[in-house]
Amino acid sequence: MILMTHALEIRDLRFSYPGMPPVVEGFNLSLAEGEIGCLLGSSGCGKTTALRCIAGLEPVHGGEIRFRGEIVSRPGLTVPTEERRIGVVFQDYALFPHLNALDNVAFGLRALPKPDRRKRAAELLAMVGLPGSGAKYPHELSGGQRQRVALARALAPSPRLLLLDEPFSNLDGDLRERLSLEVRGILKAQGTTALLVTHDQNEAFAMADTVGVMRKGRIEQWDTAYNLYHRPTSRFVADFVGEGAFIDGLASDSDGIDTVLGALKHCPGCELKPGMPVALLLRPDDIQHDDAALLKAEVVKKAFRGAEFLYTLRLDDGKQLLSLVPSHHNHAVGEKIGIKLDVDHVVAFPRAEGADD
Image (cartoon, rainbow, N blue to C red; front, side, top):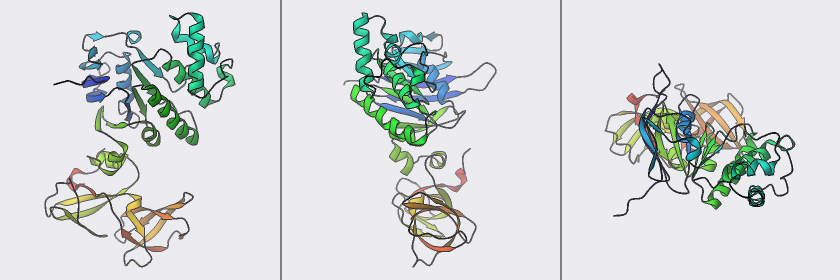
């Protein structure tokens, strides 16, 4: 039997600041060679602290971190950052203002002869879409260009792991999404193993193969973006990822749920017992506008999104739902419209589970 060695493996990681409860606890993660992972979560969930532990900037107080099977962190052992062969791309770029782009990229290649350093740096600038920009200084570059230089510099020594700490948060939304996709393409072309930290779901989904939703210092679910959205394993993940609303339902049999919007006959994997009160997750695309429908809901908010409106709808019992409606159906706030369910992926949780904080 051949045992696979992961590029990065973390087992039961724990870290706390003096006199404080653990910031990271029960944290587990595995990254295969060439895989791009992401730690996604709100401020204070521990994602940046976990990244600092992986980088060797913080000692761990429990568990272990392995690079290609080699232990680099455990209690009492912290392999220095410079010996871990990692690259880091920071939120603020961290470029040297007195060096031009070429010299910034070449900075980590001091072991090579100068001509080789400059050749490698020029190749990397071209790879990140900045050919001929080597003579420009950071203040002469746009935010997106500076981030590309920072990426080229991190990739220059061929790191065995690349860490990206909120790398696009200083950029505007359109550029952030476009650059996320471009950086993913660059990393995949290089076969680079990478771990991204972000609070931005669009950024996470655009870049990563696998995303870990973090909560209270641990990963709640480590999965593909598709599964996080359509098959969340906890109500916390269901609430956190994407948009949606919960309505009450009642499990009618092993694979059915009765709701005020009608009966749903399939809930694979929900493991609900007949008669159990449930909270049913409904995404905006699950609620269809239908003028002929008997069930009506009041438009209480509307957000124009070009091809679609995102309506916030209120049922007679006061519950609110979200619905994506083609923008040629332009209904006024206060108007009642017909709606019906069109659910592909039924996601329900026992109502007793509640909305996790």
